[in-house]
Length: 137
Image 1 (tube, one colour):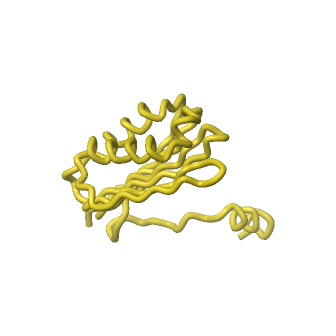
Image 2 (tube, rainbow, N blue to C red):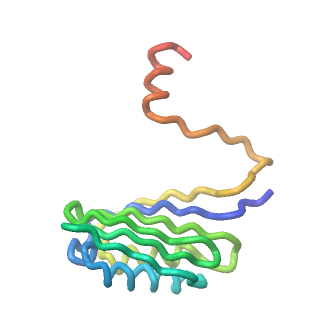
């Protein structure tokens, strides 16, 4: 079976801290990123934290985009989750990196769905790995 969705986990470093703390800027940036990917926007919701930071989500017909910002660290964590093949989530990623002026970034792509034809193991937590090392399991 093919993947039902693509989930991009995007880490943005050394971003413009003023942009990361501006709820209107983040709302506009995320909205434009969704549109750049070709997504159909259904709902937009963002929140400005006191004293600093913004979190929000764009619900799209194809799934969602989300962001959590830490302006004091010049850092943002973003998710771009899409279903189907009609939109390109990497266009949203490119827009976010550029618009938030990230000096560096990293991305992980996860295939989501019931992937019966492939063998997957659950991800282990750091504590589980450390315990395996001490017990010889």
